[in-house]
Image (cartoon, rainbow, N blue to C red; front, side, top):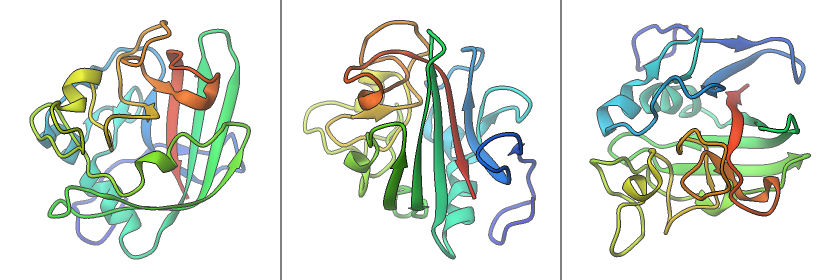
Length: 189
């Protein structure tokens, strides 16, 4: 894909569900890729578009900087329950802004909103503490980079675990707790 401001890159386009035409920015489904990574990895992306991956904050910023994009979050638990949240407007700031979660509006879908809590937050990784927690690095506490506040209502980059635990890949309103999830896919249109 060619986007101004970044080198061309490969993308995974979701064409089967939700009307198709979605650019996948995060894909997790089997725990084969460790998401407990440093700033450089989250900036540039990691994994493979034919498996588990994070597209990269620099690319996500490039995709959303000229105008906010629609965001779709598709989640599945270990019992096979599938839910989604759709946001009409989503954007991420530049690296100078620590990839601040700038825009998030227009929630709809079968999944409660556990993302708005993070709006306005800077991205935090294990080696770059930008969250608002006064005495801890939330990325270290919850084993993944994310737009933490102090600390989270969702963490789709947490540990891949079939456990009800806040360190798991989770979305609080999926079942009103921190149930570990089996599948997470974040997509832009």
